[in-house]
Image (cartoon, rainbow, N blue to C red; front, side, top):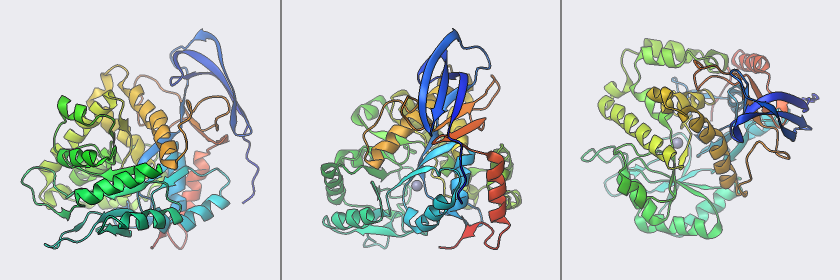
Length: 444
Ligand SMILES: [Zn+2]
């Protein structure tokens, strides 16, 4: 579709909290790039709109089925879901090559720029062990590489690189959440793990590892890993733990775990924010309304998962305090929806801390500025300066908030590479996909 998009725009008297919490600015966009950011006289007043960099989803799976009926949304729908929610950068933590062709087709046909995306290709996991346990990752409907001997790391990096991958994702968890619980998955040996960490570090390839427990995180750290796909869920980390994990960073992913323990009323409340029916498959609402009890009760893990979620949040907030948190959702897992859940993640992290001074802004800064830095790092590019600066792509959200507005509120305006996102048009496009022969779904 060739349509001329106006990539010029000005914003007058906006606050830019990531640059300066006090003053107001005029911002001009020319040809998709920020051409001017000028402080103007007068302090900010109540109701001054705020300009923030675009949201960054730091842990998603575009090829995993988020819907409760296990259907997978067409990646062209997923791209629109992200844009609708002001998410302009997405990190795919494995599986993207399965949907890449349609994503690229959509990008070529789209009038609006697509979200920026970086992916790891397929994940690497352990082999089946001698008691029949498999490596975490094989249970998902996406290929995984298995590491049997150290030399296999080379093949995984080469195969992923050939598919456009920029970083390595290693699965390490054994699937337990508390001491004494049954081990569900085999684990990579420390020898292979350390080799993978060394090999990637030597080549400047970022390596993200999937761990759930404190013990796993400490072991993986010891082997050389510093980027963790989740915050720890079995123990609230102590001061000593944090000291031992110097330089480690953690992605929050509360949204990926929570659907497991939600009751129908929780689902209906959670999926009632603006943006759900506009972007997601409404069949999900019928599905959850019919459930009588949480999956956690059905699977006998309601209590442990409830505690796990609280512990994850506590560790995520400690990571925020230490400047090592990244905001992500594990979207693509059941009930964690692309775009929508990233905004929900902010509310889950804020939770009863809504009154804590500065916490909301700190979370939004993490989901934008820190997320962007992580995105660039995974992409193999040097971390630049602040994303809202002269010469940078005009990719940001404008919020008009008042004291009662939730952190998860949709931006009033989203601009990506200078193009203004038209939410009404996105809603119509998604509806067209859903009423087409494919119902907006793909089968892999
Ligand atoms: Zn994941």
